[in-house]
Image 1: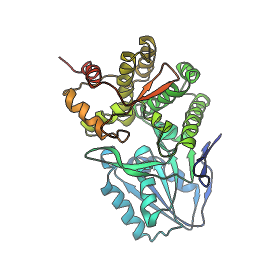
Image 2: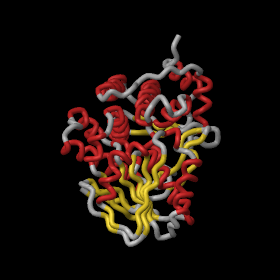
Image 3: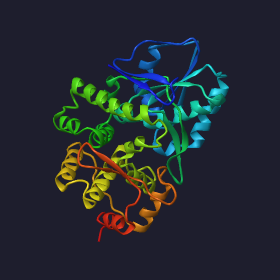
Image 4: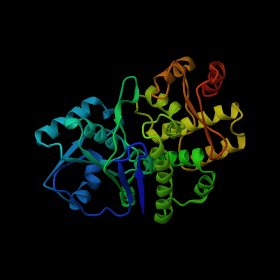
Length: 349
C-alpha cells in the first residue's frame, strides 16, 4: 500500500508512505542511520542488510524521551562532521517518534539541510509521528518547542518491526489512532471497536487509514496554521502531563490518552459531546490498557502551563475538542473558571 503526500502549498514537495515489507534501498551517496541502543539491538541488522550506499555509518544514541534534547542533536551533528557527510548525504531514522523527530531536526540543520528517510519501528511512529514533517526536541519549558517543519524523502512502514514492540508501547500507538478516528471519521471509530490489532490485515488497514487521514490534513496545512492543529487533540493536556512528570512516568501516547479524556470532559461540559460518546472513547482506551486518569496536584499551576503550548498565542489557549464522534472544533475562548472546574475533577481530595 502506498499513501502519497503532496503538499499543495509546496508543489515541489512530494513523497510516499510505503506500507509493506522493507525493500532494498540503494543510494549513490553517503548514508548515516540514526537509532538508539534498544532499537539497534533489535532491528539494525535487518535495515543494514537492505541498504547499499556509497558509505554507510551508524549513529547510536541513548534511548528515552529525556534524551530528546539539543545536546543529543549536537552529538549527532558531531558524528556527521566526523564522518564528513556532505550536502548530498542522507540520514535514516530507525526508531520511534523520538528518533524520527531528532533525526529530521538534525537533517534540517546539517549544512542548512540534507535529506532524510523515516523507518519507524513503533506503532505510534508508524501511524502518526513519521508522517508530516514535524521535527524537534524538548526543553525545560515544554515538548517540541524547538524544531522545524522538514519533510522526509520517504517513509517505509514495515509492521514486522512491531513484533518486538512491548505491549505498553503498542498501546501507546493506539491512542494516536483513536485520535484520528474521533476527530475525522465516525465510521472509522466504529471499525476500530471490532478491529483485531494482532492480525496483520487489520493492522495494516488501521495504519493505512490513519495515515490517509493525516495526509489529507498535512497536504492542506503543512505548518499548522489551520486544520492541522486538530491533530493535537488530547495533546494540549497531554503535554502538560508530560512536562509535570518530566517525561519519565508516561509514554507519549499514554499522556495523550489521558489528555483525550480531559479534552472530552471539557467537550461534554460545553455541550459539544454527549456523555455516552465520551464514555465510548474512554472504554476504548481502557480496553487497550491506556491510562485515563491523572492526579492534578495544583490546578493553577497546571493551567499556567497551557500557555507554553505552541498553539497558544496572544495569551489565549487553543483547545482542540471533539464535536461528537468524527467531528472537531478549535476553541480559544474557553472560560478560565469553567476550565479550572474541569481540571479540578482530576484533583484528589
